[in-house]
Image 1 (spheres, rainbow, N blue to C red):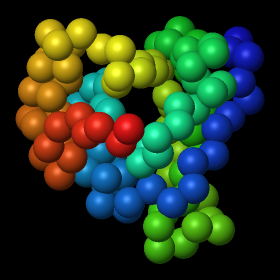
Image 2 (image 1 turned 90 degrees about the horizontal axis):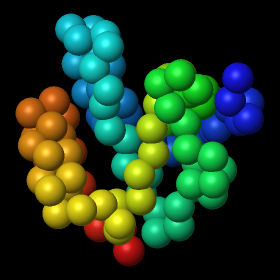
Image 3 (image 1 turned 180 degrees about the vertical axis):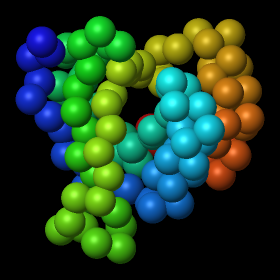
Length: 110
């Protein structure tokens, strides 16, 4: 059991979540990418990174309805984009471009 009970992220763009949901309808085991729009890392994920074997439950509201949880998912990994190797960034950018074209690539919030 993972040490985290759950994580609530408030105000994710619904288009991002819908794109992920649409792809997972076709490829249910495909790991997708969610990039919160903030400079600060999510400390509980950084300090105790989730994994496929020990995921963190995610509850998410959308920018249009901040007070209501509209989506649930499992977080199965976490990386600090600032410390990824050039090669890792290139691979992730290719995956995002193919699976989540609305996101296009990793962005630098810092």
